[in-house]
Image 1: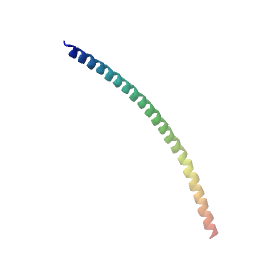
Image 2: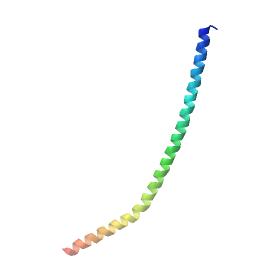
Image 3: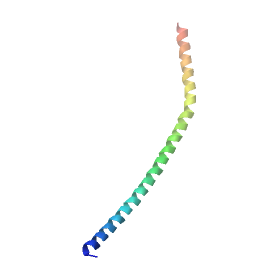
Image 4: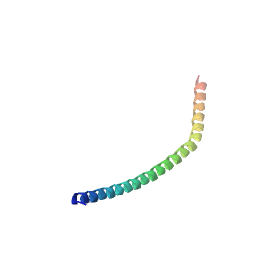
Length: 77
């Protein structure tokens, strides 16, 4: 092998190792992003269930107040 071939083999080997390291780092980053998105999804699910639980009583209170105001307007006429 000539010195040029040897240096090219070494260079290709080094670049291959660098790309493998970059690929592993990207996989780790994507795994962390997935964990973060799962956590955000869990928070949103909890928030949705809380708002649905609060929504029922709020509708009842609003309809009661609305009925009271309609009754008050009707009695003024």
